[in-house]
Length: 271
View 1 (tube, rainbow, N blue to C red):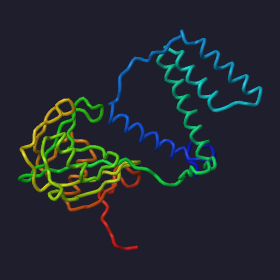
View 2 (cartoon, helix red, strand yellow):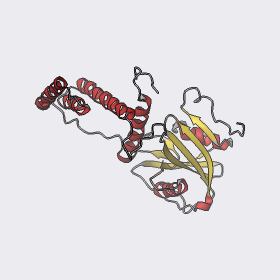
View 3 (tube, rainbow, N blue to C red):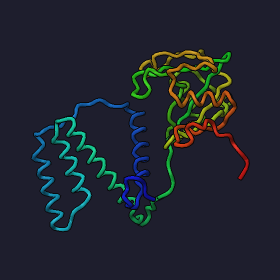
View 4 (tube, helix red, strand yellow):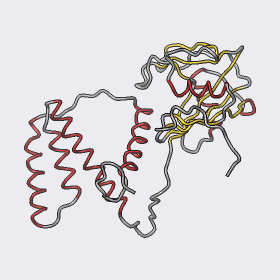
């Protein structure tokens, strides 16, 4: 399968970008966006020049490898201190890395190490709705690098070896300081968000004690909002999910071309 930008080269660029997006999302969730100095400059020009010579010699000898090509691009980036030039070099680094991944995807699997070329891995997150007197509990994000200043449901990523209901219980304890029994959780909605996110939404019938802001480093406040009057500065996809749940819709697509404006998709038994 090829995609725009592949120029007919086998090994889908879309697949590479989906994997990169998933990895970036996992990194952002763990470490935030990250603001670090570049640590680059012309004092590294000699290393970049040496890498260029190595690449040229390997080409002449017919022993050029992806390592030669990527290392040259990386060291050229390391030698830049101008922001525009550094950005351009990093784009070249990313492009070469993506093409290298495509080359790996085109290879036959090594004996005993079969490569699955078709199965897609999604990032799963869980969301919790605490509803009381027609209002849902929301938290205003802060200091996370994603959606800061906006309202969101208590939520988080599914961790390895963890069931989705255990994840919901864990997130409730970590974010709003409440204990919820598994028997008090009810599945309410699933949302497939383009391109690689699956969100599972649960409601809680009971909890204890009274919710409070248990993560002040990631949340500036919590508050109850009417289900029919959600805050305008709420992150779009949980807001859409809450409205779908209130309407009794079990499934929705979000941010897919041609589907983003369709709203919830009703389940069907037709084949």
